Length: 198
Image (cartoon, rainbow, N blue to C red; front, side, top):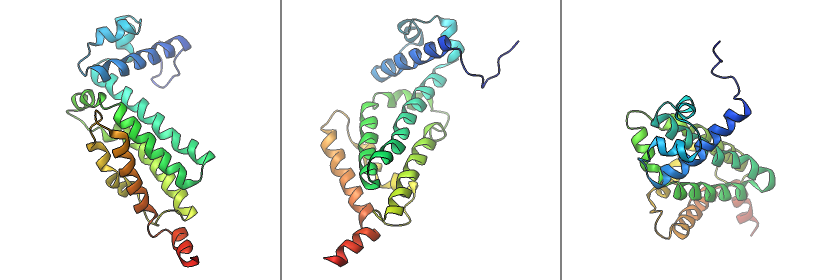
């Protein structure tokens, strides 16, 4: 009897999978070519369990990436629950920068794993959805210029991916993201109304 592919994992199988992902993130961030057998051993799972979850390096690397991206994307809605739309957007941008710099070591593993395919389909969906949610909330609040799209936003923050994670990236990213935020606010209905009142 074969299990359905979408069937939920047993709790012990889910714990094994999560442990593999945690160890893989740590090991692949440290060295893109970390041996899969070493990851399995450090995660305290057998080879069969490891390969049942991740039949090859590419599937492991892409799942680590998807999981991490989903964590960043999920914070958009959480921030909107407790902050004004413009504060939520700016804080989310900081979290995106922290993620990008902290995971820079994973970049080489991602490049190798996706040499024959597109990374966009693997993780950009959740981030694009998060950006769309934040932009919509801000546009409705009148805190950013109307008509901004997730593609516009991605182009505006593209410089983030050029920052060396081994440099003073926090101040450089902060200045860049402040500049992006100022650009998004320029022409916003709320800022025009405030300017007319002064």
